[in-house]
Image (cartoon, rainbow, N blue to C red; front, side, top):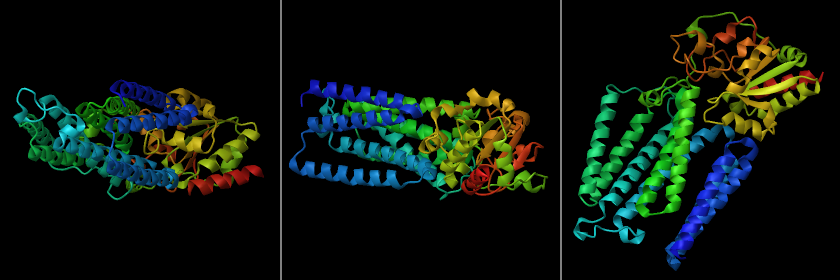
Length: 471
């Protein structure tokens, strides 16, 4: 394949990736966006193979790699439950980072195979300084992404405590490691590509990836997921510059920039500063007793109570959270909404930007249950409607509906925009218990006069409400 044809093919792939991101920005066009991404990646792979002109032996290895990897990916995507999607994405990010390390190592040891030029003025110096800088940057970000994603996966999957692990003098340690890493990268460039310094960069970066993620608490995990997504993109872009691969540069830049923008949006949705998240977030998945052990009076209700009030309401707003995902209650929830609509009730869904364990988690679950897109609203579009709602059904959410974010200046979530469910006529709050949420703090909504706690498994409780509505 000629260089001109390859350049056009890579450009077409880049356009398809842009269309993919645009499509994925809305549930209504997400399938189309996903298709554009598949076509773009297929085109990029075929173009790369056409440029490389592999030997017969190489073709066997390539086909084996594509076959094995494709089979594992397809099987995992089909079988993984939605509750494990956040940790699956973290695992995928780790593989992207590891791939960047492997590609950079291959380019270091066999630069001619990748078309990387040595310094024409002095070939003895090895690879050109510019290529070494790109290589070092790509491998450093890739290694940080790898170990950071592994830690995120462990926290999200419960293999490691979601509570912040705060090391003594951690800021000083991280700063020192950062300065050492910069010095080693400089020395690597000056050396013309020392293998020892290359692997020292990898080792230091792996350590940095661990140390910047372990202090981050469970409540900040949505930001971590989008941040690692951004890192994986920049790692790919860095290696793309090293290899002179336009497709890698375009793809990496798109993923890196979109991930950075998403991280900003998530931080804004939580009223958090990005640097404060990196410095060590708040929260953990181990739920504390409500009120720190203090017993407060709550109103307990049944499915029949909820069905009676919801069925006689004029307007109901449903607020889903991670508990809905754990119980896989989205289909039962849609059945409940359909039953309410048959009774003439106006039904809307309110989505907080950090509900669940990753950006868009609730949107994906509701889309899976075929909830109409025009019934799903983001926080800023629906918050003013809670005061007009006769009833609210909170299913598995907690921190995102906590009034302490507005009323308690001492609360760690103070200033975070929340869904103002307490302004509705009646709040039915479905949780397994009165335990605190992912941020580890109590929720005053539990004890308000207009709140009725319907405790139990989200799916079973919602199914019972559906049965009661039918009578």
